[in-house]
Image (spheres, rainbow, N blue to C red):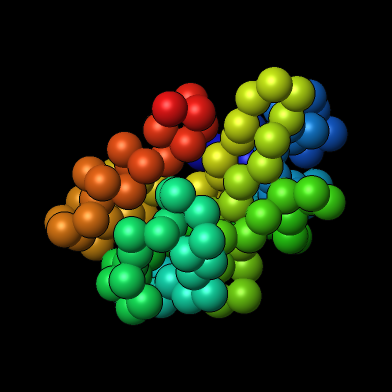
Length: 132
């Protein structure tokens, strides 16, 4: 449960946390999008260290995500699902921020856990955020 979450329990819209994220959070009751059949991840921008090792079509399907309305000015959209942002990055102050709108675990990210590139992907995310 992040962003707005189920029944708006997280309610990040309009908070300082929302201001740091690269994605725009909707002020809605439920931003969860369930895709039990799996949804294909598309439009992967491989010009970033986080995504440069991902071959086109190799990122596994996701089974759910939090819907956001887009990315903030100055942020970069790295991947999307069904036309919605899935992975976005930005710089904030002296730091870097990554937003992944799906689950890195087995609920929404079932295919991610078994994906051959899983460990490398998250290592690349951590290295980019920490600027190492």
